[in-house]
Each structure stands twice: as structure tokens, then as C-alpha cells.
Image (cartoon, rainbow, N blue to C red):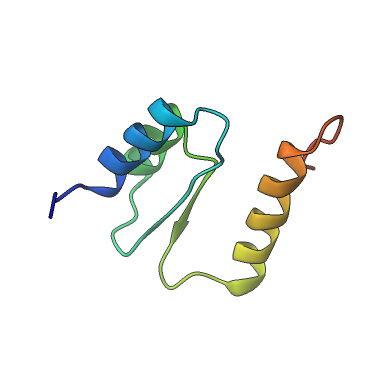
Length: 73
């Protein structure tokens, strides 16, 4: 099995399907890592333990962004 970091997986996903929203979750959150993930195309970057309301809102925003003529707020 190939061992990939989350950011490596993000880069591969975005290379294959650029429009796919990807939310990253991590136990080791840093502002630098979050900025790096966002620059590489992460839709959001959630630190663990994450708040389920924040996760739900992130998913709703990601789905809304994929709908024609709809934008996340």
C-alpha cells in the first residue's frame, strides 16, 4: 500500500479531479500547515477534535459550491 500524507493525497485528488472539494482533518494543526493545504486546493482544514457543527457546515458549503449558480456563504 502506498503511504501518502494528507497533503500528498490532496495534491493527487486535485490533479485527477480539480473541482472536487477536499476538507482536510488533522490532529496536528498549525497555521503553516493549514495555509499550505489551502494553497494546494483544500476547501477547508479542520483540527481534531473537530466540532461536528463546523464539519456539517463545511460539507454544506462544499456541496453548495458545486451547485450551478450557488456560492457558499
